[in-house]
View (cartoon, rainbow, N blue to C red):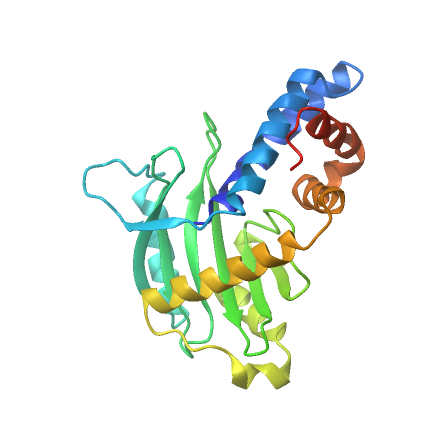
Length: 252
């Protein structure tokens, strides 16, 4: 699954504790800012990197949060008329592997996506996430997140995002996803038939995001990223974190 999203969800899990610690001390400490800045900087770097997808190895190197999650989602996919394309892991820049993501395509073949399980280090609770995405001929992409929200770095206005709670279920996610696509674009959606098709579509979406990010002024992009990543924590942490990142050379 996309490491940008994984990093955002892990950061969100940790952020509450950091903010609470900062409040008790009268504001976010340098240690807290340093931890957050390191995480945000890594996310921004990952947004510039194409992920390396690999088949799931049989030697246990890929972490697993529990096969029951994948078994349950397989049943949900089948019930919704979706077809599984296979599982993939990502290799991180350090050479480690992420937990597997399960890729699939809907019945009409115009929406593909992946399911994964995310856990912060030492966290007892895992988080299930699922993303659907479709590509229109004009260059717009439509994304619907379930459980993951709008995690990740800032994306261009041509990448439209809808959100569902995990408890809403896949059938509802598919309904929300199809509803956000304008009627005039539904006939132009890219057809997905295989894992290669799904990975290629995801790659084009990342490339469009990367190209757009490369055209934004550095300070404006940092602010957009921090607003996207921090969400409702931005008014509390955004300004001091931006200042810290600039003074530490982490804002580029």
